[in-house]
Amino acid sequence: MPAKAGIPGGEERGRLSPAGAPAFAGATTALYIHWPFCVSKCPYCDFNSHVRESVDQSAWREALLRDLAWEAEAFPGRPITSIFFGGGTPSLMEPATVAALIEAARGHWGLAPDAEITLEANPSSVEAARFADLAAAGVNRVSLGLQSLDDDALHFLGRAHGAAEGLAALETAQACFGRVSFDLIYALPGQSETAWAADLGRALGFGTGHLSLYQLTIEPGTRFAAMAARGALEPRDPDEAAALYELTQAMTEGAGLPAYEISNHARPGEESRHNLAYWRYRPYLGVGPGAHGRRGGTATQRHRKPENWLAALERNGHGICEETELSAGEQASEALLMGLRLSEGVEIAAVESRLDLGAVERLEGHGLLAQGDGRLIVTPAGRLLLDGILAEIVTSPSP
Image 1 (tube, rainbow, N blue to C red):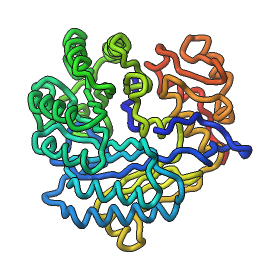
Image 2: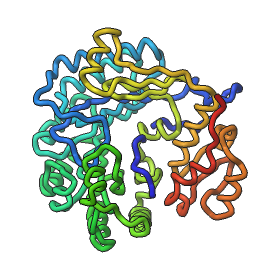
Image 3: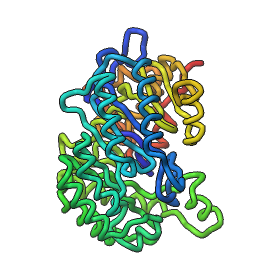
Image 4: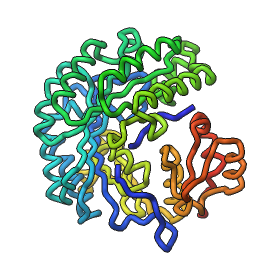
């Protein structure tokens, strides 16, 4: 089944340098800033989120600014086209912290005139009260974690808000931000096609230009995984989940929000430019606990635990725990793994060195892959089997 999306930016096609690695020169650059704190940990969540009794906002503001300054020295000069505040729950950040980070990015790199600045938000009334101030700070797009429109489902998912509170937050968001997206989780235990069709139809009626629609997956290390292990939670039958996925594609397509990625749907022009940067394998910088980055041929990873990240920052001037030079083959493999999530697919020339062409031909014969205009795409039928397709066609890079 389709995997839950993790990454949506830049508008350029992937291409190769003469050495065979994706060409980053002149490409757009995305910036990811991670706020690791949440009010509570949801039972399905495997993201880098932590619950703390209190957070020193001023200390965290200075720490994130310091980590940001390190990245500016390591990768200078190219204007930022998108900033994404992720988490955790970034809507728990003080608007002054958000404003300071946006202004620091502007000072270090410059911001493109049409830079997309997204912040993930929980739909509680407390956080919705900050939306106007966050917009004034420079945020122009919000991604709202509604997750469901049903109170019973929200309780099952461990969410702290109710359906009415979530819809009130959506209304506030639409009044404050130029672009609004929201998330829903489906294929819950016992959820029928009729019930999901009703929820999705209602969601499509709210008029947002972007929806992220994720099937519930049982991720290792989560509370749901522990429940499944002891028989207290039974994942959906794959055939039932596939039917719900196909229903989702048909309804969103009919409403003018087709899937541009496995789990993300948008009106043309409303796609998340930041996340497209990841999927198109453009450079992106990551700061804050657990953040990953790709600058040129270098992969960066920050310490995940907030306290370890702070200690590293104090010790080294940055929160990096791992910095790895990627070979041309490794970069091509990553570009392939990310790009095939997109409905536009990938340029074959950019990833051919990592393709098993025999497997591609075989799967094309089964109607799971297609080629055209020099691009390789996964067909609608193939999207249901993406993980298996990738396992067959992606070859391991040479050491």
